Image (cartoon, helix red, strand yellow):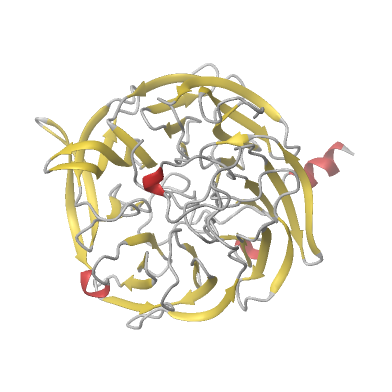
Amino acid sequence: MTRLRMWVFAGALVMAVAAYPAAAQPDSPASGLGPAGTSLMHGDLASTDSTGHRGPGRGARLAASSIPGGACAATFVGRDGMPVALCTQFVATSPPAFAAPTIVLFDPRTAQPLASRQLTKGGLLGGVYGYLDDRDRVVVADGSGSILLVAHRKTVTGWQVQVDDRVDVSAHIPTGDTITGLAPDFDGRVWFATTRGVVGTVDEDKRVHSTRLPRGEQLGNGLSIRRSGASILTTHALYEMRAERGAAPRIVWRRSYDRGPARKPGQLTWGSGTTPTYFGPGGDGWVAIVDNAERPDLRVFRSDDGSEVCRMRAFDRSGPGTENSPMAWGNSLVIPSTYGYQYPPMAVTGPAVPADAPFTGGATRIDVDENGCRRVWENSDRIATLPKLSRADGLIHAFGYGPWAPGRPQQLGPVDYIATDFATGRRVETRQVGNAPVDEPLELTGTITSDGALWQATVGRMLKIVPAGR
């Protein structure tokens, strides 16, 4: 991802086989991870932003909404069917605070908040990358240097959200640093990464081990996990890392990339805006990022040794930059452009060059094989959320705006639920669900549940979009 911050105010049979890859991304859960598809911000540990659930699609409608009092960066749904979100409350009360990280539990039918728990405030990135464990607990970092396990339960007085357990990792985090990435692996460990380049693991016995990446390299993206290691992207380079029990994570390989002359408009920091995406042979044989060059390139490497599979311009007609992680299905990637997207000033780091640019949007599909990269399509979708690609219905589900035109306000007016055909890049559904600025999508993350509902937060509301007939 996309770096998302917790702050206030995306023959017919032959053609079918080619369009819809047979190789699905791995949905097998890691140790301690909750239900597949609804327990992680990026859909799965490989960060494919894909799901095995069908989305609302054609005939979608807004079924419920609420005003939770903050912007919710990620929403999870556990085995009990209860949606729980990582939110930033605009004004918190316990203790009084501005932009406080909060866990909020929602009614699955009405979308109304049922209970919440305010966490210790850290950096802007703190708490964005959490996940749901196999006991329906949110695993998240707070500003005190702890990894928390936050449970929800119904009592005689109503629903409650409570801290069930915690692991203190503060001894491994320098003063002023914060955890930005958090994910479980397949061997029972929890991986974490900090803004200033500390990468660590917590064993099942709660022992903590860490290593530090080169000074000056910062992180703002999530971690991607495969069975043999983790992929981590800094503002300068892509790393493949591994961990053995009782030892600190070690670097397997490092590949630097073109980070460009400065932060671009529509990105949060100076460097790549993508969380690495594992995909391809075996589901994780390749790893992809988009760099921050003046004309950014898609870079695809072999996960085992870092050798290059292919490299090509990420966009042809779309804006030249992205803060979104590539979606993946089989050997295919879909990359939305966020170039020119107007983030609030408090969310970005450093000046942009140029200072601003039109948010023209656009998304592209690129297929990869051992012979190189090939662009399949490029469209003009102005996606304003972290989108989800459904492997069940072949559609990309997101919130966005209508086509950009000179002189038209960039991020005002109708906000639409949009569904786009993965095979062709053509829009199959556009349904207005709100109006900006109240429903500015803020590049927040949606979740598609097993019953086809899309839970998607905006700056002001939590929305539940359902299929026709529901």
